[in-house]
Image 1: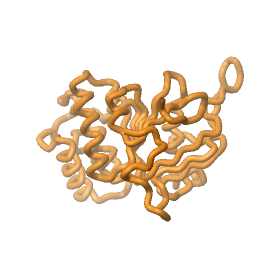
Image 2: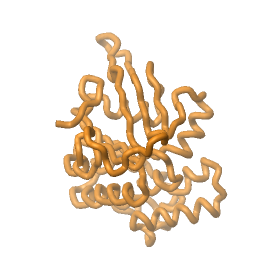
Image 3: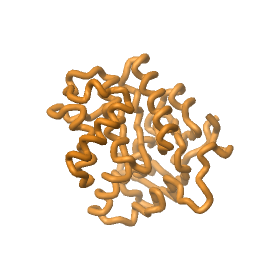
Image 4: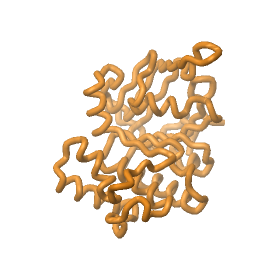
Amino acid sequence: MNDGSQVTRNETVQGEAPALAASGIVKAYDAPGGRLEVLKGLDLEVARGTVLAILGISGAGKSTLLNVLGTLDRPDAGSVAVAGTRVDALDDSALARFRARRIGFVFQFHHLLPEFTAEENVMMPLLIAGAMPVDARARARRTLADVGLEARWEHMPAELSGGEAQRVAVARALAPEPELVLADEPSGNLDPAAARQLQDLIATLARERHQTFVIVTHNDRLASLADRVLTLESGRLVAAG
C-alpha cells in the first residue's frame, strides 16, 4: 500500500490512457437548507491495473462519487473518462451500452436476481452487452471458477451463503472483462471470516487479471490491500494519512 504519492507497479504506460480520469467534478443536490454541494471540483486519475481504496466518513459523498465515476449519475460540472472515452459526453443510450460493456459494479448487497441461478446471474451483463448465450454461459462458468464457485453455478441465490452470493456478484462484475470495476463496501454486509475471504479474493483477482478496481470502504484491512488509498474530505480527494 502507498498513499498515492509513489509510482506503483501498475503505473500507466506512457501514451496509454488511464483506466479512469476525472477532472473538476462538481455534484450538488437540493436540501432543506439550500443547495448541498457534495463534490467540489474533485480530480482523480487511476492507472490501469491499480487497486484504489477511497475512505471517508459517512455522508462524505463516497457513494455519490462512485455513481458519477460509474456513469450512474452525471456530474453538474467536470469530465469523466474511462479508458480514454469521455463518458460524460455520451448520450443516455450510448452511455448505457458503454456501462454494460466496460464498467463492472459490486455493491454492499449482492443484488442477485433471486429467480435465476448463480450462472444465469453472471450471464446477465454479457447477454445485455450482446453476447451469444453459449458464449455467455461458457464465460460465466469460467468466471465462477475463478471465484471458487465452480461447484455452485446451478444454485439459486437463496441456496448460497452471504459470502458465496457476494462472490457471485464479483463474478458478475468481472465476466464482461470491463476496464473498470467499482465496488461500494463490497464486504460490509458479511461476517468477519467471509469478509476476509472476499477481500483477499478481490486483491488476488485484481492482480491476476491486471484489473482496475476503485473501492469505497470503511474497512482498514481491505484498504491495506490496495495500491493506493485516498480519503474523500470536504468534496475532494486527498492522500490518506
